[in-house]
Image (tube, rainbow, N blue to C red; front, side, top):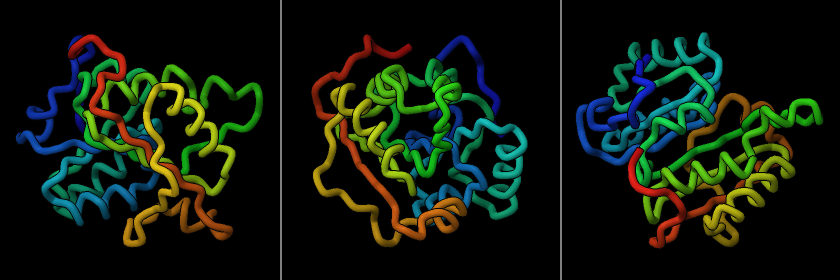
Length: 196
């Protein structure tokens, strides 16, 4: 797993040893999707943020066993890790089958918040994309509301790519189909005041 400093943005070139585009997977779980994506696209760097330390460690070990060199894994809460990501430095975000946290008392754990959306918009490169998928349409609609409010542009009638890798959770829970939304950041500045 990758260790980082708390006092400066994550130096992607130091993390990966190159200046290729970086795509961030939030909550990879068992990692099937991000491992397949990293193997399929070896010229793209993938950075996986997993809340559960044990799952992050297993995923990092699996990547090493498979010889996947363009994937780094960190354990932690993305809401804290965002503070270490420089403005306009992420080519794409992937949020696939996040925990819905449906109970009112769990609302603080939900990702589809205004603060989360602002951080996505701040760190996404102009023209960068956000992919959101869930078996629960309400979860995707929550992201639609917050990402739209952060001035990211929803791609009309977007559908998941046919050949995209699927996570264990999608394979298990999406029997009735996958709700999906894709957003892009326009060339105009979306909020942020330079790299942190």
